[in-house]
Length: 144
Image 1 (cartoon, rainbow, N blue to C red):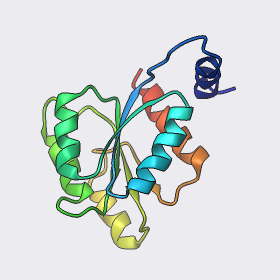
Image 2 (image 1 turned 90 degrees about the vertical axis):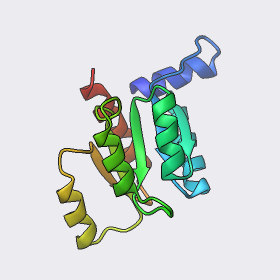
Image 3 (image 1 turned 45 degrees about the horizontal axis):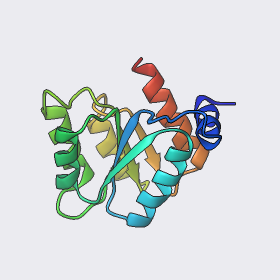
């Protein structure tokens, strides 16, 4: 049983309240946010969400966050622009970021390579649930 399954089991039994690590999901697709929240909260994580890059940056500056799930293709400000803002901010730069994308083209891989070392992971949507959970747990456990 994984740490998340164990924690979710205790919470379900009412034996403990567990806030878990806090993840901010910056994603303009509300259905994807709902899916991410469902998956990650079931694993014992606390999930916050923002539907735009600007609101996500505002949340990051005002709330403690352990990890960011960041959509690449968003209106107004794309994920790469948000990533640059996060990594340029002295108070935010150490927060790991997993980039999410519905596209997986050579151009995206080249763009990803440009940001090498500035983010923690890269997941293609629609993602496999276990892949998302494993990547989140891997990155958060590496920070401890």
